[in-house]
Image 1 (tube, rainbow, N blue to C red):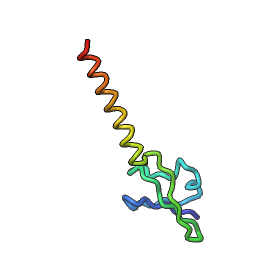
Image 2: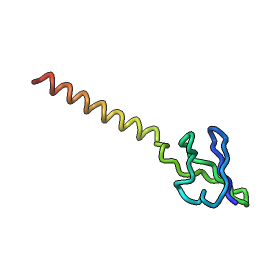
Image 3: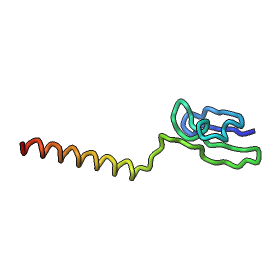
Image 4: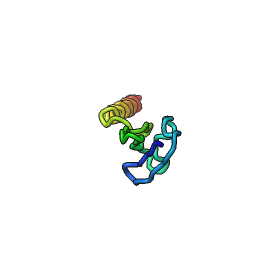
Length: 77
């Protein structure tokens, strides 16, 4: 039997549904569960809310640059 545990809030889930990505995320925290099988093997579950920090900063910079360009264009008119 699989056991999934949220590393943030500690809630636990049990069952074979944890094999599917849609059941590998804590519904309260949005973090990927730590999933343990009967052999004690632990893996980290899928979490769509986890994004690479560098990628996130890059996206923010692109959006900021686009806003600056738009404001500059509006001032030129």
